[in-house]
Length: 298
Image: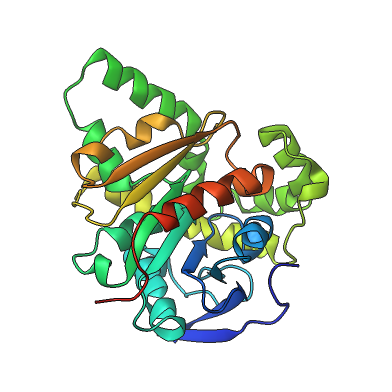
């Protein structure tokens, strides 16, 4: 186990309590790993084991997942709230430091929100995004000139994201999700070719799946219909998995127009690279940390 069984800290924001876990070198560069749906912080076990030799690794369960508590309404899952959670965790456990942020799936989506804040550089030294689109950039891209390449790219991602349509309807997918939770290792083997032995579902998985539907309802239509793309001044690394069936590379097409310092690395994996390619992903994150500047805030 890379992380202790019990949280090292609990951070409260409003009516939500966030369970925080730490491992690694206390004096090493701080790295915050943020999970997506329907995972918990344990998604990062193998990646953290690689990083922990030289880095201070911080993780937390997102609101509505794992050992953290859930807000009582859909609005509580808006990206603005999740980004504020990240800043609250950093203020509590790494005050005065600029932390290297790594986000996967919805962790990547909210990482973009954190990185786009006007004062992001005061808290974030770098951002590595793994399979997480910037919804504002994607919305702007979809509203761009209707060239053949843009239309083809939009159709490609629309097919990959077709499942999210059902996720928009309250309670409709809930029974199917509870059933899916009982077969999660088998699903990841089918969807991503991941060895089921590498998958240890959280005991809260069924609940987390249902809670996490509010992420889709709170953000996707709102951001895609009225995107507000913003410049990002912190260094950003995109990790593109060649076999990602949920997030296609086209979602990042707009990023070069908004990100001042943008880097891209490619992995030969699927959507859940933290499980299937932890060594390669940790190496990409560590390499970017090393060249992205000091952790101490100015």
